Each structure stands twice: as C-alpha cells, then as structure tokens.
Image 1 (cartoon, rainbow, N blue to C red):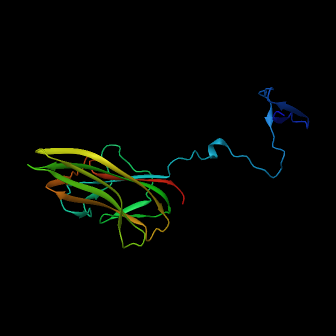
Image 2 (tube, rainbow, N blue to C red):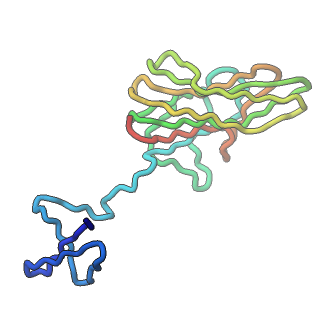
Image 3 (cartoon, helix red, strand yellow):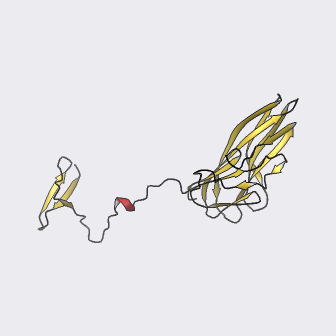
Length: 199
C-alpha cells in the first residue's frame, strides 16, 4: 500500500495524499500526534568529523628516541585546527574526550652518507600513562649521498581513559646518518588527529 499524507485545509477537513498525488502551495502537512515534535532541517546535525588537529615539528630531528621538543600548531596562511580535544606537552599527546581517534604520523626524512643508511619512525601508545608500546612503525633508507622522501603511518585508537591513554612519536637513526626534517612554515614532519566517533 502506498504511503499517505493527510492534508488539513484549515477547516478541519482532510485530504489524503498518496504517492501519486501532489501538494499544492496552499497546503500544510500536519502530524497526527499532539505530543510530537518536528525539527527544522537547520536543527538536524550533518554529522562528520568532530575534531581534526595537527601538530608539526619545527626543527630537524637527529636524536634517537621520543620526539619531545619543537612541536607547534601549524599557523601558516590559513592553516587551522577543528576543535581542541588533543593537547601536547613535551611530545606527549593527551585527549580530553574519549572516542575512536585516527592518528597519522607523517615524516619527511633524509638518509645521507657514503654507505647504506636507514632509520625508522613510529607511533607509541600507552594505556596506563607509563608503559609505551609501538603501535605503528615504518622504515626508510638509502645508499647514495642523499636520499629523501616522506611517509605516513596510520593507526586507529580506542581512547577510553583520558588520564591514562596517550601517544608519542618516535625516531631512530638505525644505521648511518638519517634524520627527520622539521620546518616552522610548512608541514614536513607532523601528526594529525581525527576523532571519528564515540567509544
């Protein structure tokens, strides 16, 4: 059976409009429930990402270990963040809301020297605010005077505790001479956080 809409002419008389009918410009649609409500389209959320934030490294990274310094919020031209659910302190990233987050670590890297050189960068996570473990890792290298490029790691984390669940970025010069490139005006080595939804 086709769907129906009852049309009120203002005098208590109703016309049944089915799928094959049309609604005139002088007609109104009524809801046959005196306790019901109808939202305007402007009141209906369009959905989408709740938060997108970036932090970048402003100086070259040459030391092995967690990247604990020279982080900044990108501020060149019209760069901006949506929301402020993630904060950074000494390279440790914390979350102010629980939820599912996509963490993407992009590294602009160089490997240089006369022999083979390689290193790796990684995302580390903790669930007890103490013990960090690698959750994503990528290697890079080269064997010419200078080899460079850029790579990205992605991981989706279920943040259930805003006190204990945190992440850090990591770099190791495994062999030869390698580094991650930093810059104060463009994104070369940076991390992106996207909140995808509630946990």
